[in-house]
Image 1 (cartoon, rainbow, N blue to C red):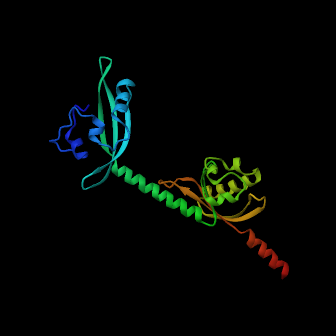
Image 2: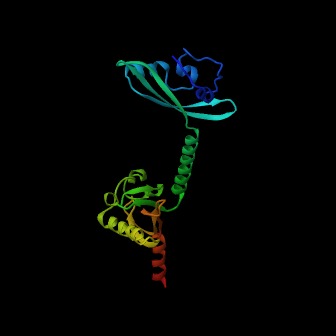
Image 3: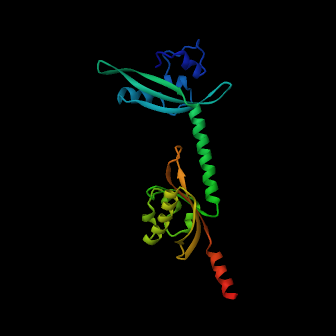
Length: 232
């Protein structure tokens, strides 16, 4: 049961200072039906398990956009026994808005990557793949998302991996964009030649932290050029 609620909590929860919530169940009174954790579960965590409790909730407030709260509760222990608990409420609405904006941007970026008609990938300075797009499903190997976190030498035959990594190192060490041709195997066993642009990736302090590759399949173009030369 609630024994004290400061004015800031009243304001945050749209509870009038004149409305007494003393001796009322704390979660159901403060958050009404908007909590995911019940009063009995809070009691069990604080008084039986003697542990801390944490939750995030979204509440509706009059004339205010939906508010996100972070709730934390800790037991009060006196003479070796739990005598109560302290709960703090923190408005994390701005953090949530920024988080949702980042997630939306990441989804948009991934959609652009997946619909680009090219292989797009990024590696760190150790050759570990940190990004791929959907076009990697054309290659002989795992599904695109399973490339993430694996080293280039774990995913490709030694000769192919050495070719790919050598070009990545050229871009990373030179700090410039390089253009080269690379050959990789598709799922059907055919060898495809790609025109690849590789460039260094930098952090906020301009340090090189990896490289990105954008590769366009030019196998058909090369075949057509050979055919034309044969006819001429």
